[in-house]
Image 1 (tube, rainbow, N blue to C red):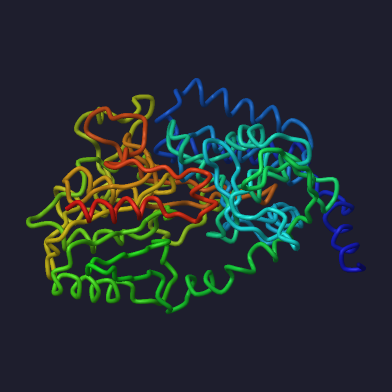
Image 2 (cartoon, helix red, strand yellow):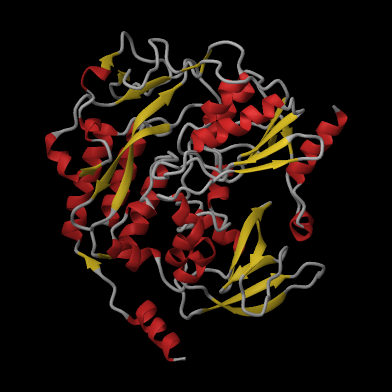
Length: 495
């Protein structure tokens, strides 16, 4: 009991750190200069007057003293309005002080869940006495209806353009990250008055709602089930992909993440060994499960090498940047893993004429640095080719490298996409290289992508549509049905 009281005091009674308005205004000057000078997608979905208005709105909020939590929330709302999936006040890049004060606390809902038809549906119960079993519908939390909660949180959810499916997916909690977007922002928008959450729920098999009260989880309790896995991902050498054979010899390759920058695991050797095995066995199909995988390394290229019969140019898009060299006045605030990002040099060249799908409000340079050839990235056939069928299980989380892989698979008919529409955007995304913009007065960080991908001609403001659409129901969640995999098995049987 004493521990609970101490925890309560720290979470609710400790004085909030306040940032003076003058300091916030100084941070805003740096933020605006950096974004207007360097961000390649600042005007992709907003006109310059529209962005001017958004900067002005943030400036108005910064005209008064704010707590660190209030400043973080205001910055997050601004970042979401850029409509770029890689522009946000990154949880993982904040200082320890910000993480402790803003991102952690005993304020996590004690369950995992997904949004189905904008209804919050429990997928795993962590309450002490199992009050919300799988399939429970959460109707309200602390008197606020869950559709209202979703609508409010959509104002900070990051996605490219008008892809609201990605925004909703980012607000689900599956235990796939040390920091979940919902966990961070729900208590910022709806501050708790105690460690307990009053909820209205509808249990599986019941028609009438019931009222219950549950204990919120601490940050440490939330991450306990995934700590070992996350440690293995970061610097570990354990396999992060899973390989399973079906009765007919088909293989299921499950890839929860491609973010293996810091991993010591030799994923390339592991993956190629299994693709060799699959080709040698003449397996009828390869099922690649990318659900929940936002992206990371371009791991899909290793698979594409086994599927193409001739050289394949990955994209006709052009990679454009806004600068050749960063302004000296900004350099002290721009953190990154590769200092060469501050000076592209000869890699950034003048465009012969304005690129047709790039915003005309600002100048761009063509970035040639990462091209494998003068024509762009090319996939060359390598290894034992796989002649069987390929199915890719997709969802709205696929928004970066996984989105790019799925676009190639669909465009060149290398496989069948099964599931829900993806994240990302066919108009192009921003990423590839980043600055971590550290605002000196508040101590807050906001990610700044540096390379914009722009197609040759206008494209839909949307992610990819699956070749075979499959959407689970609440009853599927209750029963634990994997409807996407079931559809693939059905299609294999038909073939």
